[in-house]
Image (spheres, helix red, strand yellow):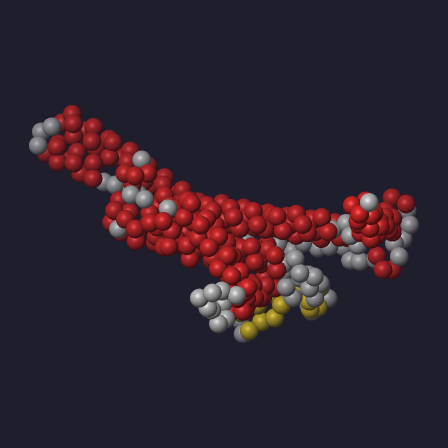
Length: 315
């Protein structure tokens, strides 16, 4: 009886109001009004959503433009700074609730890094991988707050420019994170195996030099073979350099494309059917933000693990 009454309460106080609001939004919203040939009530008459791929400048400091995505990224940094100070304030040997939450986050990320890179290199890779994960997911989640896209300024041409826009939807932000990921991976590789040994994996002329020496010694056949294989190794090294550079492009457009598509989906759904129809898409965006942060940081971790391993080990 108690289980049945609790289900009835959930049905009455949650699902029925949601269905009623959905029906109102469907009938009186732009989508339903277009089918019925009526004019939406004033409360549902909202401007059509406009999608601007470039970040919109909000104000200028000299010749430098402050864009809405830049403000959003600064907001993310401030929120993370305040949150970290709040969670780690007055740390003790026996942690309280706030400190335990911070330690759980750090320990979970560290275990994630150790499971891929091993304990030998985990401490070195942890800070970069964890920073990328936390920054990407924070940008995605903070962008779901109500004042994003709704508070802004009117420009000289009468166009509305939102004060805050999701930082991950500006291609410059994913590109900057991808560049830092590239720098992290290459610097970790040089630090772990040595600069010259790491660079020799890309530019290896050793076999070619050996072939030239053998030609001078009169070993024609063996010298020619070593020179040929030396050219092949050099060509493979050049391809490897391009593969490292192309990673930045793939990282950038994967994050930019997914987050921009999610923002467009929310804008269109909230315009066509107002009120509660957008709620499931917000849940989807929470999942997508987590997945994108895991993919970005996880691929950085995988490439870093390959970079810090000697070439002989990876073979």
